[in-house]
Image (cartoon, rainbow, N blue to C red; front, side, top):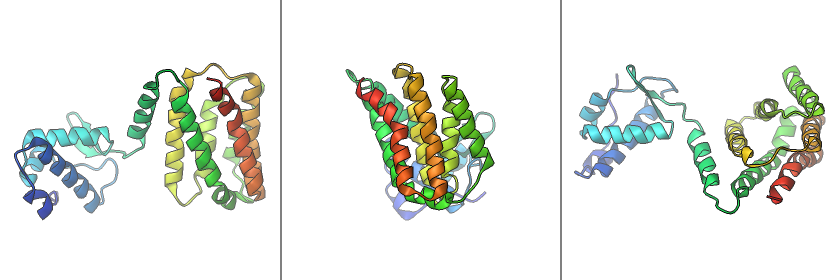
Length: 244
């Protein structure tokens, strides 16, 4: 197994300060993952190998690994070793949800912020979404919209279908970070939505219709109609949040 890169700046700056050694280990492990072009799930050197190569203490390596685990860059499987993590948006999601719980006197403040960011991102992506969906057909996405409509007509929420719709709508885009960000904000939205009361059947139906209108406008190549549908999609939720 290739050794961890011991670049001059890293090793020359070592001191007896644990935080400095931990920072050194964090930087070196990330460098190793990048330089070795490791994919999520790939094995990493053992704790002993890291200590020997970096010239730092075992406690510093452990502290570094704990930090990288929290960031989803490293995954520790007990009894099996260390592996490259999924490097997902999970840490950001958890941080935003927790931040939302630290809003005394205004339970909806954090959720309003998240919804506003989601709406802004959807509006900004309008031209790109319309470009890739003009004339495009997808039976699976059609099925998702049909399920949304049926559930809305029954007065039921369609959380699973909502997530699938946005994920599938952005899947053809070249920049997959847009999809990842949208899914992350959607997750925050879902985790904080229990702060609100149950939506009305009218709002549920209106939201389902807006999803169908977004898809229709995108397929017809109508950017303005797509943006109007996006605004309509968020209007019931933003209205409810403004009353919180």
